[in-house]
Length: 198
Image 1 (cartoon, rainbow, N blue to C red):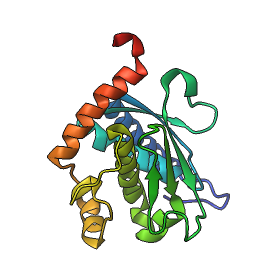
Image 2 (cartoon, helix red, strand yellow; image 1 turned 90 degrees about the vertical axis):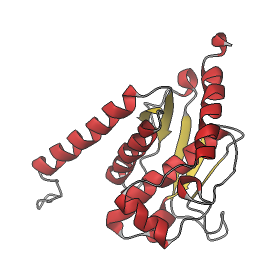
Image 3 (cartoon, rainbow, N blue to C red; image 1 turned 60 degrees about the horizontal axis):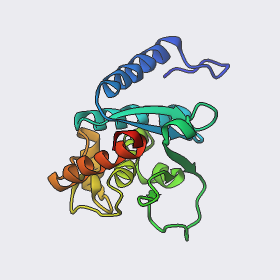
């Protein structure tokens, strides 16, 4: 994106980004059931928006719809019981050492992303893609209501250089067991969101 002397991004590049993001959200809106997610835009709102669009597409591919809100003001906290995601930066070395994020899967509501660690893990151009995978990974813990990890793919406990390379080509896959846990978790999530349908 070109930036002029005043720090304003060029209109063409910004319109293109908005078109890409809006198309991603339209696709995500079509899937069902819908997760309501409120995200703190952190120090890099544009990067977070790009990551949300990628995450929405990943979830849409497995039939999970998402509805994203900003963290402050627009988050429908009481009505929709959203998943709330905060960006933590900077983070101390003793706070969940080596983790890029953590979820509270049994509480089923809160996630903390260690944004400065995500930034340091990959080349700056790859941060939106990695952040999207971190979002999907942690949201999946919330959906599944478990801290369980897989040997490979999206729910692997610690990604390595090969995984980061794969993320640049196409999203990491869910294992069949992960997909089954997501389906089971979504049934429970839907009941939690709509207690009158029990």
